[in-house]
Image (cartoon, rainbow, N blue to C red):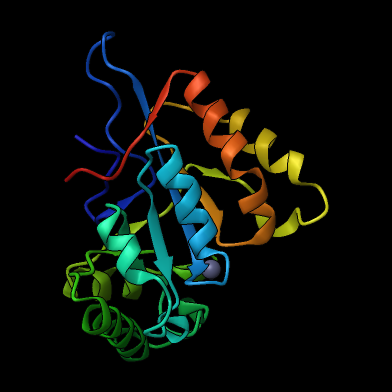
Length: 202
Ligand SMILES: [Zn+2]
């Protein structure tokens, strides 16, 4: 049904079923919770859009606006605790990293964590075994905005995403200043191209 392998790794969501439905994409934000989270949330609220946030649990303090994220309908997933390259770790180390991170986010927010994105998009068969053991769906992406490289060239964030839009695509963004700056226009353009911005719906 989804672009899902038996390993429970996804790069996209279900495409529209009939020509009367709108095409859909999912926005995802990695590497928070950051200082610009409130601004991202303001923008998503203004545009009535839900997104997924993959957080490094070491950055999650009680004073970050995690309550807003949940109340406004977004999803929080784990991006590990300290952002290691998991393929350089043993299965046991990967299990500890992921379990600690999932449990910390759940402890602070009270929300169950069901999704995981590997740092640098790097994973191996041990990662998948560990993610499955922890009942985490591994969420990769179809379109990378390259926003982390484009601090001085934010227009390119727009074009990388808009030029590669396709039905069902999961889009990779980050909680960065340059991303915040283009986000309102980016969302408006995605909508103009005939897409709904939605969430994973399992
Ligand atoms: Zn990351």
